Image: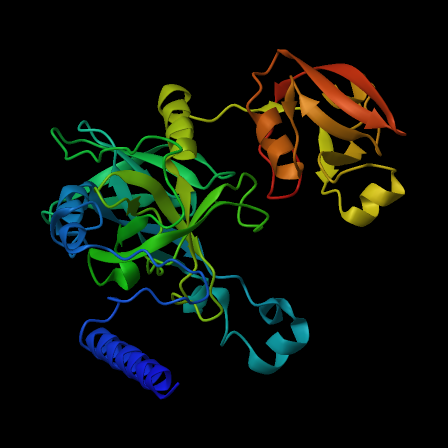
Length: 395
């Protein structure tokens, strides 16, 4: 019996010594022993991947900037404005006490004054076509384009599209460095984005961020909205400049910022290259953009509206108004109808409906699928040319 206990004590001592040795080794070489934990498997980048594999870090975007910077220009505009005449100058009581001291002929405020503005632009063809924003050149009677090499050229407006805030300019110059367009619909949230422009007139500047979101709409900036959102710093003067990817290819044209102070807060918007290219080609070919129109006013379908109309989803767009005598009116569409599809393409909300109808060629017949009092029906409407409208939730 004594021998048995002695043997057991020796075995326990040996186990304790082995465990102590293993624990010491694990301290020296972490991860050597398999330890039961919470079941989470951690995947870590290997040394091979860090030094030459797919996960290698890019430390500089100098090549992308060098590729695209020569295609971004500064735009200086000016226009002549006349200050509003003070109504007191026409008040007989005022004139009785002050005489002709404030006579219009002697009032410098009534004389025409020149107001200057600045922005940016993107060279899109070697023969002198330049993209910018409509609001950069709106009402300007003189436009100067400053190239990155310091040369300044006069520019004329080929055409503008206020509803997307796109404008096309033309300068007389040969062999300009045109930017390379990225492929449409390849941009992803998280991709690197470089914003190039002339913020506050300090000179050409490159800022870096990422693509924060795609397809931003319902912002009230323009009629047609499908913006790229980025946190690359965009400030006044960047408007019309280039938003490029990590390879230096154009993915959008910078157009607006969300700011309470007038400066960058990390929320900037750019018009995607898919819209820019479509508008640009129409402006160059025809001087303006032609879109389809049905003469309806639409609104979003909220969960409350869907419930009151007996709809199963919030997809579609509610017809809030129909222009009397317009295409939709002649087709028998009524306020309260819910448009579900245009030529077989589903309507997800009011913005998608706006874009679907705008893409229709004027003069063609559009097939509209709608719901009226929980009854589905089809209507045919002859598309007309869309008139230029103020920004609103209309098509």
